[in-house]
Image (cartoon, rainbow, N blue to C red; front, side, top):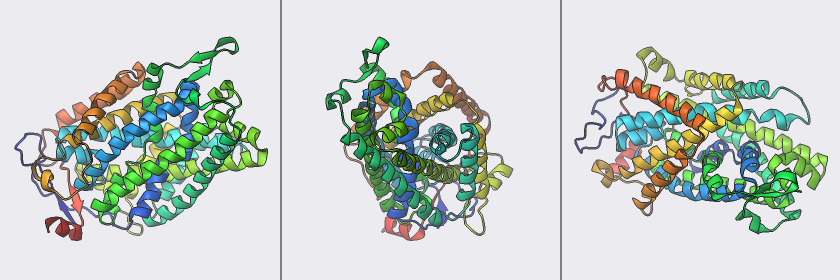
Length: 477
């Protein structure tokens, strides 16, 4: 495996400098489509998204939650095409920032990195905070404390070998899919309202009445819906550890999106149709609904399976996040002592152990921050991250990228252009507080770029793409 730089030769000032970076330790290629899909599905964590994040959407959009998810999934198909094409052109643990940096420019890559960093740091504690609710049948503990414990446990697991984690998370994944399937079966079996409510959204109104959910509310809720379906992009973060990434990455991305969307959407439709009342639906207590549809034993099983799904998600997210931080240090984003620390690999397991600690421990601390603030900022960051990917995909067929052997999305450039327009509007209608937090962090990162990274183009933010020697020869042939 050799560190190389791929640089568009169009002469633009923002192109990546053609400089050999110092060769750090390499991540091991050890997983294929099955292992990658198991890990990526676990990061998408469809069941924990269903049981932890969906209830908040039900409270705001009522029976319109399924419609928002359908729209989000359609958008995600286009996003997945962008990820698949870019992930095969730039198979880097840096994910979005490496893809954007090589196809559009270093500054765009830096902005993508900041949004990715926000997402990967905030999403795990948001998910982990739901653990206590579903462990309540056997133990009662403060949700923030329980979330922090889950994050620390996930950090320890993240230090292990990636192949071992693929099978561990695969076992947990089976449990969460079983729980989601059980909820779907029970919901459909107790359906008591017409499917028309899915497309004519309703919420409980004042004095026992019904309130109509407007399309404006649905569109505003798309950021949250994108957050729910987010996770299929993990495949590109694992590209450096995938065998034959130009084939494995697109298959993993698209399989994960399809399976994950089904595991989330079908139970949401079942819950919407089977909820005893609109008040119960808006309350979002899915465990209580399951108990009412069946019995307490089934409700307990579902609750424990959900708790396992959350722990599973935290493990995989810590793995993903550590690879992003590792890659940023390898690409010289920080002062040199920090770069050396973040690129250190465990001699026994080959994992970036300091990077793993650096994302897991702050995640435990974030469990004590207001959950609504974390969720709102994450929704905006996910939309902005997808926006960066859509912009990057417009530059994926110029210069040397034009003739490169890679997956090519259908309907290019129509799909990226539509995504850009829609995502800009989705960001525009988000709450002002979330926009201020995300905008403030992004502005601070831009200043870091202006005063530290940009003046040092030969020694800082050198976006590298390690490539397997066998695959490189295939691409040349």
